[in-house]
Length: 208
Image: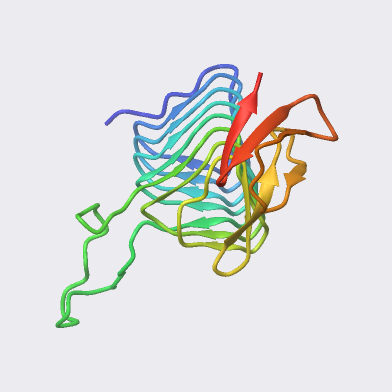
């Protein structure tokens, strides 16, 4: 049986459980009462908050912040620089059942054709207490408001809130809101940093 790979620069709290084949990156931090299932990979300088559960074969990038008591199941991919706030729950099955239809056989928890992927792209933020559906993506530097229920994909730099989450505007790389929903051909300058954008038919293009 292989053991977890934990570099000397990483920290794992004594109350946490890392199963076989887990790989931690350099300078990563795993805090108290975290459970990371087998063969999950976590990148460099990533922090996993207390009470979080991460299922098997999950891929998490570099410099990701996962706050306390998040749940990340199989088939979720989290890219670099993502913020997962406290109490965020991901899902991976649209039609979950505990048993087969006859109620006599417990269904396997192994992935099957109903296990659907979710990708959180680089730089995105998911607010506290949000629930994220499956078979969707959350775009680069998008922001999901706290308590939102995401049932469809979210575009790059989009701000989405509510239940179900709806697109209400746009955010900058720095996280500040830069525009409302009205499409614009004008160049938009963030008021909090030097970044500039062009928005056309809900597509955001960064201006060098």
